[in-house]
Length: 282
Length: 273
Image (tube, rainbow over all chains, first blue to last red):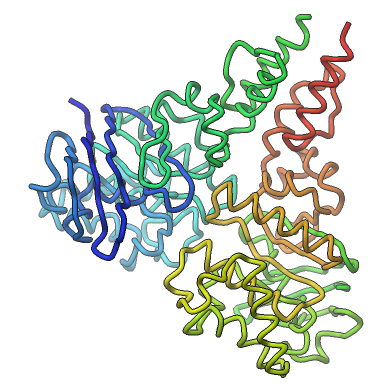
């Protein structure tokens, strides 16, 4: 059973004159690392809001078609129930953190579930350890750097042990190294714990290497959906102006000039390797 | 245009954000100030229009020492566009927003009208003339903030993290727009850690870390030096990364963007027997 499935999903916000999502049908399998991208205003944030029931329960509006999360139809289940399965991390961690200490913030969701104290303590320790912020446990979240805050936000969601973690541009306020560290943490959660990841991201140069499934949206519709190497090499992907990885862009340019590299590179390392072979073989 | 002489700056809480920084930005120059979060980039550029005054040393803008001029007078010469447009927008309509500073600077009514029309046109905002800035998307609000600064025609424009939250299309538009400003002999300073954007635009780079200037030079020179960039916690642009692995083959070593890469690779293959 897929962990998330949408079928003919069309959604219009209460104030909207046209649908924010139009006939979206996607399938996300358990354990996948999905990168969801597209130009600003393409509907990717709205789609994420469907995964934990914020759409339609909180935002209202008109929803057609179906959204199934671990088999549960979001229409028939509350945000509270869905939160056990889907954790959402936002762009700006400041909007998500509010407690006086990191530890309390991470424990907050568990308290709401009515978890026993001993179990809760273990769970908090575990989440802090995995995100590498044990030494910050007593600190006030608002005193931390942007990168540290984003780790705390991830720990809060991780502590709930969701099936799926949805992260909406979690690094846009971070510098490239800070962003890379966050992506590494997310990747470890995916590879070591098997948590399904849906990452909404513009910075494909940094994020694409972790993905095994890419979905590209534009104007509320899914335009491309498949494996990263198959998707990014398409001319259509470039024309959508999503900033495909430069390594893949080089592949496209050379292909246009009659040079086929054989393999499609996503990362700089791969491009170097492939170019080395091609350029020194002649 | 802007001369920073041996400037140190300490915030009231005791944190020294700049330490003995010296820098000259010439009239009509295009400069990118780069470094990781907390390196002192924003603190430095806030000295350019007098928002901050040095604790030690001095800053001279268009011949005027910033200690002897008001922020208003300096802003007339140096326009500042903040990272977060919400820190500078407050009017009820886009049109009022753009007119606001012009009124403050004492422009005539008919000049204001012309300038507002010009700025709305330039940044493709005409259809939002009567709209509240807060109804617009983040990218559009950034354009309104930029329009309101350009309207008073400052000699220099500072853009703080202009690419944050912008998709590739919007970045391409921004790049073209900066090129236009540079062609009009404006001094343009961008503060950024977006190394891919800088590699495409090719400005002069000032690299900062820990409140100091680590290096200054052309984008080609700075962005192909991994040791230097590591000190500023900046990663090489992807194209420079790819080419740094190909040094042994006889390809040029100073390739930083996709256009240069295309040319270098095709030239290389053509030259082969």
